[in-house]
Length: 259
Image 1 (spheres, one colour):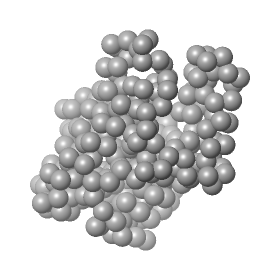
Image 2 (cartoon, rainbow, N blue to C red):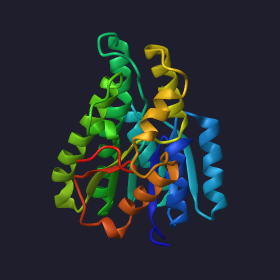
Image 3 (cartoon, one colour):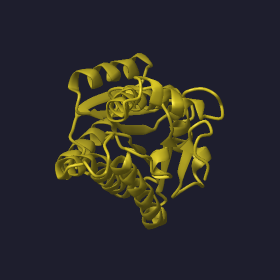
Image 4 (cartoon, helix red, strand yellow):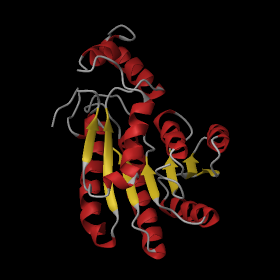
């Protein structure tokens, strides 16, 4: 197992991509700290990790609250015996024309998608430095962090911000042996894309499922992305084979956006 003896924390681990990442890292040998606001579902995800023979701690935490996030992560890492990998996966989407978005909506998505990543970088880096670990920080970006999409303008701007944070943190933390990278999924068959398609339908008048179908048809490899596709790449970024990669926000979209 390539991650045997490692301890990883994953935010937004109750379902979707976050849960797939937690389970994949567990299969690779890591013990997992699962963080989410959904108490019942994150507890169930932790049971699935334990069924793989790994230790798991499931905790509810508001990642947009700096003090709460840092305290929760520090206590959990102490309980398991350290921290080696931090996956800042949690995030929300927003489908709305830029001209219609409200101040409250902008503030909410930035608190979670941007501030949540900042606080996760801070919390993990402080633990790594205190314990002398050359840890790995892995952030959730998106194809929308490489290209702005219509009706996803505010969401796209948060993911562009994650790319900038990833680059800056990588440069600042390299001296401590800490790497910082991001993964950029495309059209993943999760509940988030079900909601995106629904909102696109409401705004544009397109038939339900039409927007999803249009984007999937543009994927070079000819199929929708799965949460496991993303989790496999995060496992690579978590392991030793990625030790010489830092500051990168890498597209994993089956051939949709090219940079």
